Length: 295
Ligand SMILES: [Zn+2]
Image 1 (spheres, rainbow, N blue to C red):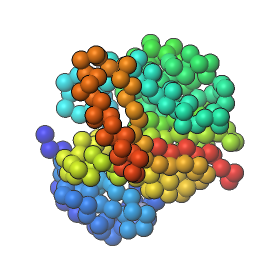
Image 2 (cartoon, protein in one colour; image 1 turned 120 degrees about the horizontal axis):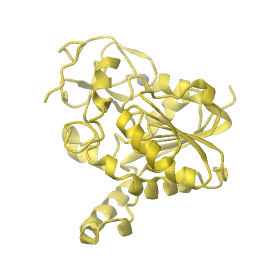
Image 3 (tube, protein in one colour; image 1 turned 180 degrees about the vertical axis):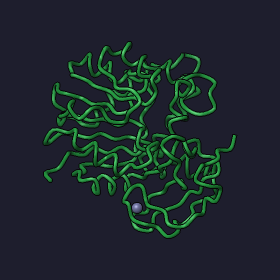
Image 4 (cartoon, rainbow, N blue to C red; image 1 turned 135 degrees about the vertical axis):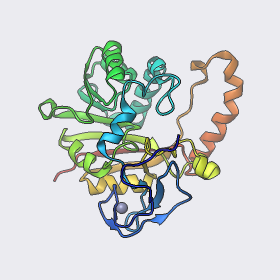
């Protein structure tokens, strides 16, 4: 199904505000051909790649209804809801590895877009006081059941009274939102002084995007509207007032022991190829670690 935007059928409309730096682009430089009725363009100021025209809040909400995390739906994470245990095994250790000694032993954690809560559950088990947000009410229900922690549904940000947090995480969230710069500015208010923001999302520089071009699996507006590279993510975080420690391309190693035995040898060459791509700057994901900053 081709998506039809209420903003009109002309994806080349003039006067577009860059979602990552808020600069006005008279006409963003096109990158490839339109996808699902959306143009894909690059900001002349910060070189961020994004889909336009932007859908409305109401249009976006239709993609995060109860069906979003269910099997067999056209959009969303089909089958994702069945993987909280696997996610917990991968994501919390990945974050601990990324942050190293900078990660306090325990503290208060906000996970924005917590999906089915596997990551939250692992953090809570490790002694963290964790809070989540999730646009999908059904996924939020599962997250509460999996982790036992507070999850606010239908919102990107929790009530302001829940702040401050020592650690805020946004796993594969900013590629979905209408205004990533504005969201990052708001998110910063939830961090304690010296608090850490961890962001991971699909990378426009990835080997998959370079090989598959317009058929890259992550190129799927209006579900994914924003296509960061490690560099444009760093720039956007800086615009939002963060002090960026690292922003780089990564390809997480899929632990073979977590896979069904029959898949292990099939997945090993793919794992090696992806890891090699990560080493030459074409990692599947952009991952950034920032602190709130002093201003
Ligand atoms: Zn820009």
